[in-house]
Length: 84
Image 1 (tube, rainbow, N blue to C red):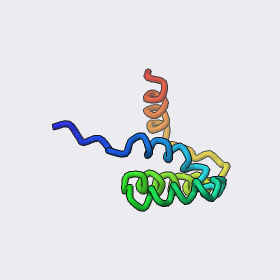
Image 2: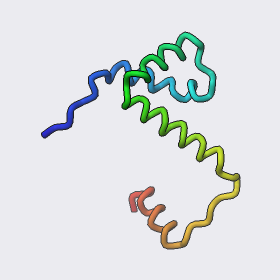
Image 3: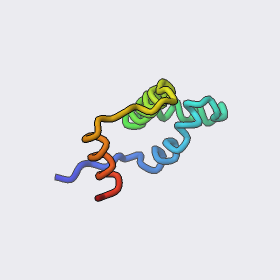
């Protein structure tokens, strides 16, 4: 059975493009209101916003010092990224 597609896909797509500006406090008040109204009735978009917000928090919490990976993990990661 095919999964049911999200019924609000066009409005959700349009609003999803604004989530980063919303989280950064850069969205105009009228658009914030529209976005918040949509989020109040769309659990899918709420999950996207929460996930994006958490991702931003994690990235901001990272230091500028790169994390060392074990050699085997790094090799597998590079292999997947390069398609080798």
